Length: 309
Ligand SMILES: [Zn+2]
Image 1 (tube, rainbow, N blue to C red):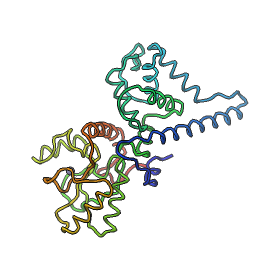
Image 2 (spheres, helix red, strand yellow; image 1 turned 180 degrees about the horizontal axis):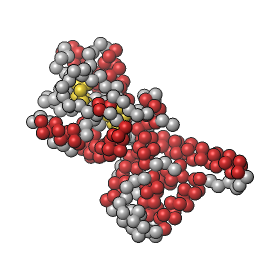
Image 3 (spheres, rainbow, N blue to C red; image 1 turned 90 degrees about the horizontal axis):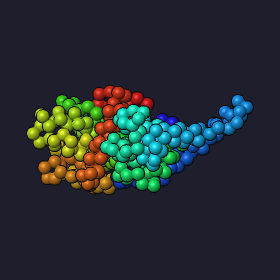
Image 4 (cartoon, rainbow, N blue to C red; image 1 turned 90 degrees about the vertical axis):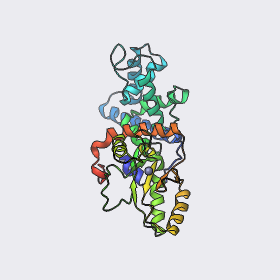
C-alpha cells in the first residue's frame, strides 16, 4: 500500500497531538501478520511442503540475534529494532549494536519506535512497548514502513499539505509545504475553510529544516535560534497577515481556532500560528521530523513541488 496516497485520502484519520492511538497500529500489524500467514499457507500448499509461518521465523531470528547478548529483554528489544533497521551503533560482540545495554542509541531508537506506533516516546521498555516490538517483528515492519504508518495514523513524520504559497516571493523557501502528521490534516481543513469564507489566504512557511532555520537566523535578526523554532517541529506555519483586512483577520482567527491553531508568538508575530505544546513535545517532534526529512529528502524536489509516490 502507498501510505501517502492512503493518508491523503483519509483526512479524518487525524489524532490529537499527544499522538496516542496505539490501537490503530495494533490493528495494522495484526492484519499484516494474518496476511503473512495466509500467504505462507498458500505457498506451502503449492510447494507441497509443510506450513512454515514467516511470523515464527521472524521471532526465532530475533531470539537468535538476541542470544549474542544473553537473550535478555534489552537484547531482544535491540534485536527487534535492529531487524527493523534502527541504528544502534556498532556495540556488542557481533558489532551489530546488540549488546544488552540500554545506552543512548538504543533509548533513542526506542523513542522513535514508540512515536511511530502511537506510544508515548519515553524511551522506556515498558510492557506495552515490548508487546509492540513483538508485533512489529511478527509483522516484519521496517523502520521506513513504521514511519509511513505513523504518518497515516497521525502520530508523526512529515506530510505534504495543501499550502497556498506566495506566487512571487523572493524569500528562500525550500521544503515549506510540509507539516507534522498530527496537524497536517487539520491544516488542510483550515485552508479549505478559509477559501470557502473567501479569505485570500497565503501561507509562506511550514516545516523548516535546521539548515533553513540557520539560514534565516544568519540573515534575519528576528528569526529564532536554530534548534528552537517550532517550525522545525513541523507544528507551526506563517501566513501573510498584513494584507488581510481587519474583518478577514477576525474571521481567519475564528477558523484557525476551530482547527486548534493559535497565534503563539504575540504580539510580535501575528502571522505565526501553531499549537499549544510543551517544550519537550516540540523538541521530540523536531528530532523525529528532521530524521524523517533526512531519510526522505532525496525524493523531494525544491519547494516540494513533486513528492515521489
Ligand atoms: Zn513563524
